[in-house]
Length: 137
Image 1: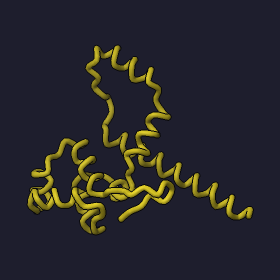
Image 2 (image 1 turned 30 degrees about the horizontal axis):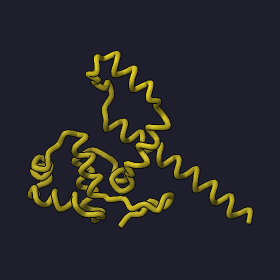
Image 3 (image 1 turned 180 degrees about the vertical axis):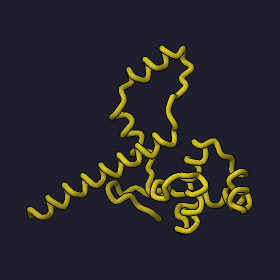
């Protein structure tokens, strides 16, 4: 079981695999075929809270995402980052400008990786601050 040390939340690696797979538009059957396993194996992986590092590396390779993203991605934290980065008015303006048919001009995986990297940076900053506080005592 992986636990996010800054929030004490459990990270569900299987659920993260499913999220990345769905973002990329890859079906379980396709991933299974590419990996040389059965579709039920992919389903089993996605239901597990933690996976063996070798399995994670293999899946991450096929999905073309960093292994660390699968190990550490926390959707709640990503939503908080998005909420703090973009205002509701930005989303409203985009929807009106496109006639409510918003087609992003960016790669969703790139945005996920960007959010993940930002999340890691925030965690590092928080750890540094906590270490400085501990040193003062």
